[in-house]
Structure formats: C-alpha cells, structure tokens
Length: 437
Ligand code: FES
Ligand SMILES: [Fe+2]
Image 1 (cartoon, rainbow, N blue to C red):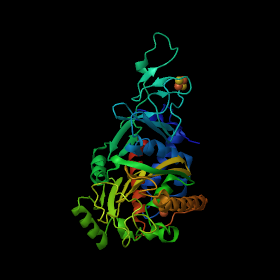
Image 2 (cartoon, protein in one colour):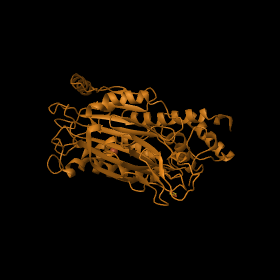
Image 3 (cartoon, protein in one colour):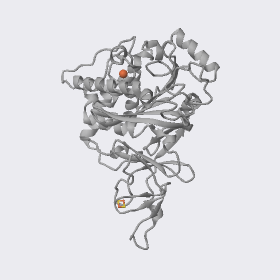
Image 4 (tube, rainbow, N blue to C red):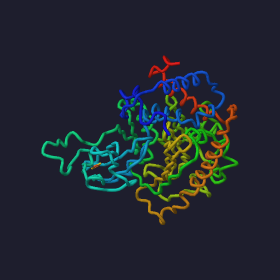
C-alpha cells in the first residue's frame, strides 16, 4: 500500500504523476524523515523502518525513482525498427520503441483513450502499436494513427502517447519520468569515456535473467557495495573476483590496481577510479585474480570472440565496474559484459534484471556455452537473493538497531547510504518540507 499513491500535489508541478492532495499527515511524515536523516550517524546503518515503512518507500519513489535517470535497457535490445520493450517503474508502466528512422523513444505505456496498457509483452516487434482494449493504434514515435468511431471532430494529434525523457549513451538507454530531469551532460561524458570502448551499442544480448528479491531495494544495493560477505557466500565468484577492500576503494587503491590502470590506460582504455561529485556515478577497472580474464570457474574467457574488435585479446583488461544510483551496476570484461538493473516492487521487494552481452557475431554453442557464460553470476545472484531476504527478515525485528560499518570493508556501503541520504534530504528541503513539523 502506498500512503502517497501516484504522486503528491506538492510535486505535481515537476512530475508527470497524477494530481493528489498532499495531506497533513503525509507532510509530517516527510518532515520526520528529513529530521531523522539530518541527525543520523553516517558510521551506522539506517534505522529499520527505512527498509520496510510504506510511507518512506513512497517518498523514495516520488523523490528518487520518479526524479532520477534510470537505466532501462540496452540499445541493442531494440535491434530494429518496430522493436519495443516494456518495464515498470513504481506506478509507471514504461514503453520503449525504435521507430522507422531508428530513433529510440520512451513513453508512459498507457493508452490515451481509457488508459489500458498498450503493449503488454516484455518485448516484441510490430509495425504499429495497437491497444488491445479498443484498438486505438499508435505510430512507433507515439503519434495516434487511428481510433475507431470517435466522430468527425476527433483530433488525433491531441492524443499521442505521453512521452518521457530518454537518453542513450554507449549502448545504454536511460529514462526519467520527471517533467524536468536532472542534467545528463556530466553523466553522459563520464559513462561514454569508460564504456564506449566496450562497444555495447554493437553487441548482442546473449542471456537475460529476472529475479525478485524479498528485500528493500537499498538492501540489494548495500549488499552489492561490499565484498565483506564474498569469501563465505560466493564460492564461484571468489575464484576470479578479488574481495580485498582496496580493489574498489573510494580512498586508496593498492599497487596491483594502480599498475593495472596504467597498463590499460596505455592501451586506450580509461580505467582509473572516477566518481561524480555527487557520488551517483562511479567507474573503475579492477584486475581479476591470478591469470583470470573472465568470470568463469577456469578464469578463461567464456566467449571466444572478444566483446569488441578493438579490445586486445592478449591484454588482461580485468573488469570495468560502473554503477549509477539508484538503478544499475555493471561489469565490462574483455569477452563479455553484464548489466544489472534494480527496480523496487514494494517496501520489501525488489526486481533484479541481469543481462549478458557478447560480440554480435559470437554464436551460442560455437563461440560460447551459455551455461558457462552465466554460471558464476546466476549463482552469485541466487546467493545474494538469499542474503538480502535474510537481512530483511532480521531487520524487520522491532528491536533492530543498526550497527557500525567496518571502516576497512564497508566504505562502499557507507558511500551509497550517504548518497541516498543526501539526495533525499536535498529533495525534501527543495520541497520546503522543513516548514512542517
Ligand atoms: S483503452 Fe486503449 S483503445 Fe481504449
Ligand atoms: Fe554478494
């Protein structure tokens, strides 16, 4: 249940969401959240109700997921004109299309007649988009093409699909449902420099997995942002992925990592740790363990063809790690890339979609074995799903009190929670909720 379903009056000037009255109780709740964030201790985790309270979850949807740029899909998933795919962001059904000119569009997947979902499948290909309810028919660029029995005065031009903001960079499609999205310029520059050499815009989706984790979306992120848990919980990943905290440190990189950056940058691959000023986007290239070049049990490549013709197969490029809060983390290897998309389903439920991309000419069964390609991260995801679920059950206890972070191994978790707390406070203050107490 959402306490603020669909949007608040106070935000409707900026959001595409429906108009609602912003009640006093909700204002007080939001002001309380602000006050608690302002006085939290950054060395400790957030209080338990931040991970289960429907009101706080609704705040997060409205102030984060309906305001930020979110990773939606890869451009290669809309491979040809007429391709479409759908996803759900909170209360927003989203539709992505590629039109006849190759242009990618994002819309609210809601018919302009009486609101039915226009495309119900996860993905497909169609020359036009036909609403299943009464067959209003839309062009791939969102314009209404035909509507039966609507009379002579009916003006089709007034009923195009509602467009939402959409940006593509280095093979990634980002969307934002806010009326005024954050400036994408710096994010574009950052991601492009690091990810473009992996040529994901010319890759092919080899495998996709979607799981539901029974935990709050922040628990999914916090678990991702540390490897304190890796050695005991991830036997497959630990064969190739180093779990020492300096590997992705926000402060100090170790000698092996510094040397790795130097070698890869000399080969034309931007590699050094870089994080945006607001902490939302980070890239860093890490070496894998020993002679490993990929996330396989042997350490050998899972795909015979390198991901990009430009990548030197002899170079141990390790893994480029990239995250963009609150929706995606990614690993780019020499032979394939893996993206992860995080979308909240409820206060204690999160959808995680994982995609494996390979060179477009790589043939399953010839250049790679799909089981070998996916084994390590399917296992790791399942292990993390269990961890997150148990974490949620444990912190649901009314007596739960957050403990301190390890200063050695949990700086990444702290960095995520700092970003979350700062961004939420900025939005709450921006909406003048400080006036309410
Ligand atoms: S709701 Fe789509 S045609 Fe009626
Ligand atoms: Fe994990």
